[in-house]
Image (cartoon, rainbow, N blue to C red; front, side, top):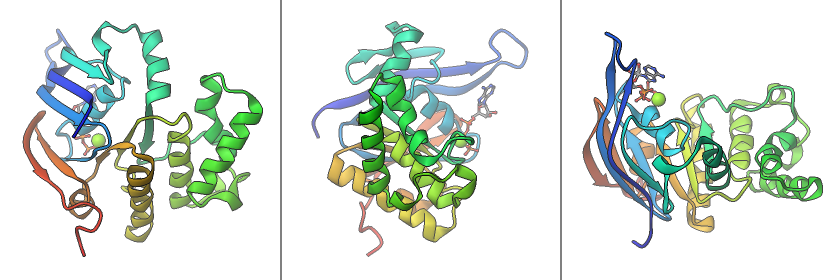
Length: 237
Ligand SMILES: Nc1ncnc2c1ncn2[C@@H]1O[C@H](COP(=O)(O)OP(=O)(O)OP(=O)(O)O)[C@@H](O)[C@H]1O
Ligand SMILES: [Mg+2]
């Protein structure tokens, strides 16, 4: 595979630094992710997956170590620069959707484009296209509370795609969904990966879903303890 899009070396994350409660949640993570990969991250609850994801997504900074994201040294970037980098390069999908409650589907999808300074007409058009891509054309003016869990997650995926990011970070995106709805969400990720060439990093507790990815890394107590190849989309056939 070609270009490294994520390069992490010796990533350490501690919380409550300097207090008696200080804990080391990540203990020196080395990880390379290549452009266009579909990677699964698995591990027990509390092992540090979300902490790692937050650092990958530049929502948080490591205590130690270096992180290069698409050629940019994150450690040397100011917070202000980071928000712009994040908005352009990364789309986030969370277990609990994180949609804006008082705002309809299409406006939710527009938010990252608004921050990127895109004009209203273009925003609107792009949002419609993205909602169509995830099969939500008939619900564009519904509020989150008027949507099912699977529908909310599809809106969240459309929003994650808003600025055409190269990386999608998904933290337990199917965790709150029944298996059939989770399947549908997973199929959308496969499509984004195969047709749109997105790099996808998926945290999941499901061994079946992890197995569908190209590579699976296992985190335990803040360390990567294993790495193996997945079977890809048709793993279970
Ligand atoms: N902001 C924080 N401050 C203090 N401790 C934290 C913070 N965030 C996470 N932790 C601790 O770090 C450890 C790892 O948490 P993390 O959320 O990364 O686990 P996880 O692997 O995502 O678990 P789960 O599968 O339950 O989501 C936990 O012990 C947690 O209590
Ligand atoms: Mg987590």
